[in-house]
Image (cartoon, rainbow, N blue to C red; front, side, top):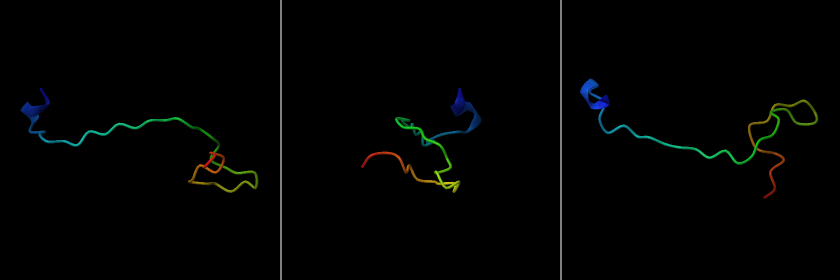
Length: 39
């Protein structure tokens, strides 16, 4: 088991992906935010 390797109390997270869009906007600029997602 994982506990036998000394790994205890690890934080486990999960994520939900519900939207995808291109990294680059219409002007060719890379964007970190979701610029087409409705508010």
